[in-house]
Amino acid sequence: MFSFFQKKYFLQDQLNGFVDIHNHILPGIDDGAADLNASVELIEGFEKIGIKSFISTPHIMNDYYPNTSESIGKAHNSLLDHLDNLGKEIKIKAAAEYMMDQAFLELLEKEKLLTLKDNMVLVEMSYFQPPINLNEILFKLQTAQYKPVLAHPERYGFFHSKSLNKYEDLKSRGCFFQLNVLSLTGHYGKGIQEIAFRLLENNMIDFLGTDTHQMRHLEKLSMAQLSKKHLELILPVIQRTRETFSF
Image 1 (tube, rainbow, N blue to C red):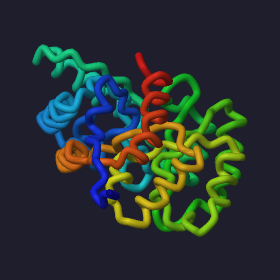
Image 2: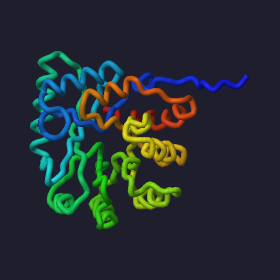
Image 3: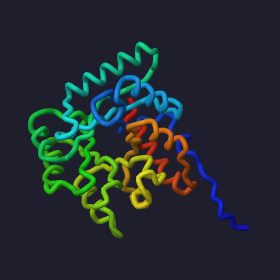
Image 4: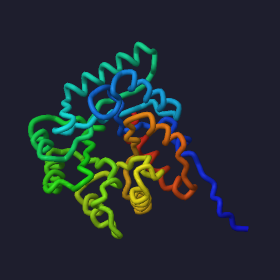
């Protein structure tokens, strides 16, 4: 007899040994961990679900979080020293999440960017509208030998439509896509959840990240369940992320 009750699988069971490439665990420099104690609380929460390797990605956003390589490096070293004093064996590399705007173009011309790995750089855009010169930004990134990794493409409502043409255009321009794991749970809304699964079904997602800012994100992640069908869609992305960014 057909059952209306499909078995659910806890997503966290697949994340042991995962490298989280998008998070805000560095202390006191953006809207993530407010201080060292908050950083440690987040890291201990990650440990409970088997994640001990991180590429930290604080915002670099000119008007709100004017971080620099120096400010990020200082926060990174402070956290590493604190964790060492606590006897915690945690791997953390420092990168950034860059807002694609005019200030970013100016930064791109002046200095070397903080990358996830090699020449792969995490970028984002406003949730209200894409930058007017988006194509120019992507072109200049690639001219400078960087590969853009677009953070949470599923969260940009202006790209949502019956077709995936706008996403296909971005992929054709050399963008990798990094999905937020909580998008699969409906945390950001049903529409974003639906687009997340459509992107997965069309093999458009390259990497996975948590985008954790605070403990409630980890609490939701620890309870996240997926159907077998949806779990099978995300497992290759988990594995690809782990293999690409392990250090």
